[in-house]
Image (cartoon, rainbow, N blue to C red; front, top):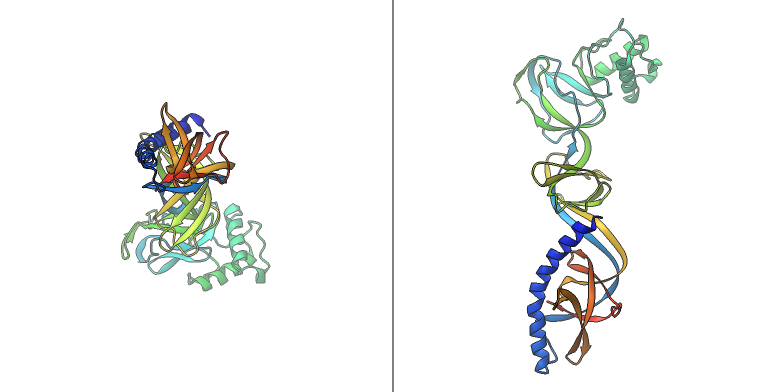
Length: 351
């Protein structure tokens, strides 16, 4: 944690505390001078010893993970079926249709660059096709082996695959009838409308990897203590859900801002990864076994110092000098220390 930046933010907050508590302290002093037992605008709280977490919050966007995906079609014709934005497409599922011919998603890192069929040379693209056919259950019955050699077993597995997927029958896969991507994908934009004419190489949809992440734009000064690995809690409002993750990158953007990327530990239960607004809380520092009071219990004293107003009973109180450490501005809590501070000590706080 960068202490210089932290104490600047603490100082700003404590300046506000000084303004807010000075009036309450003067009211309390006047009430005691008249012998009153109750002090208007104050309540008694107790110092506790425990864990204090310093938090920073911001608004973010939930989406899939951007990746260099091959989202252009290798077919030409009329778009006859399109997925809706936010649709997640898995291995063996139809992504869209051109002239009513399906384009099927398969998993692999080698982009499709040729048709598959008898007589083709061996290669890594054949290996990933064979692996897909085996995972989808079309190769075991024919003794298919993922060795990159398109042989009789491959031909029979492709026939079964074509029949199941509604592709042209036979032992070949025409160029463009399948699309290789590294894993499940999510549709982020329909690049063309239903019924549009597309040429080979034209974009039909925009895709992202189906790996949820959150991005947050934040002022650099606010994010000064957020680093890679900082825990984050993500709140989705509709449907209501709380997810946990951690910061995986902190990247400067234009001006005095940064972009924070949060990878999630778990995927949303039932939420398409469209661009959705979320609320993010970052736990930038956690302190254990420290004395904690509400921020409203801090009293500004002469000389820029701070104190707690210990309640002695019968309308009496005394000021206890304290040092102020970390602040949890979200929950309104402050870390305090001092030789007279003890757990359970009753102190007065502004209501």
